[in-house]
Length: 303
Picture (cartoon, rainbow, N blue to C red):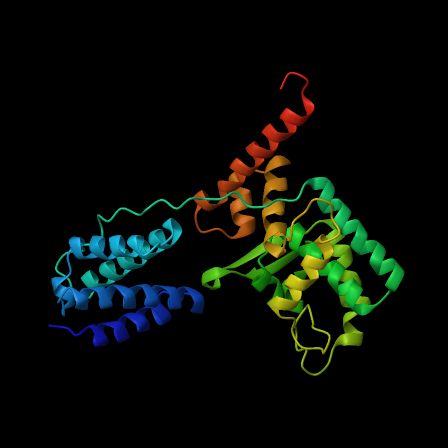
């Protein structure tokens, strides 16, 4: 017999120490497990060894009845499969009852993407602002948007950049992605130029003893936070005609789509974005196809 409470403690330690997952992911997995265990208690099941595939399906069905989205149900199925696999390995289960559980397919919405023209317009407007204002923060904002669009980096990765992560010889940046996986991303000329302008001509006037080795700083000199970066991007893109409220992830989506449209292969884009699975990157092939069809219908006289 093994109480749910002791198993939860051990499983939490496993997620934190061995899987090296982010706090957000761990919180989601543990929340799913807590919900499942509560369902088991309602079913009068008080031991991990008694769990069956029927209990898991009953729990998922109950979630669906309560209005759970397909994407949420899909994540919860993955969560419980991870738990039963671990529980079997630890001897709490004689058989991995979750191994045969099918994952509900979530409805995938295509990400919002800027056109190449809109992306260029946004960058040009930032460069114009720098020329007009000549302030440290205008240079910083220009560098932020240029680097995000050039690299397809996540906001968290950009905020975590240190001075040693910039390689001017190879025109690359080194970022720390999900699961503490490090990768190197190339930057184009405009992004390197904007980054250099910020680091050499503006950052020193903003830096304080709180700055440490951070590349991007807030107005008070500390490492920039994600909320500030999102505000910078929203403002940079807000002037574009016909563009809804787009944030940093739209720049990541745009970078991936424009790379594919420019001839980059899927594996290269996967490596640049830091996707663990190629299936995640493949969404951008659908985006490119949809954009191609839209352009055809607008431009071709026989469309």
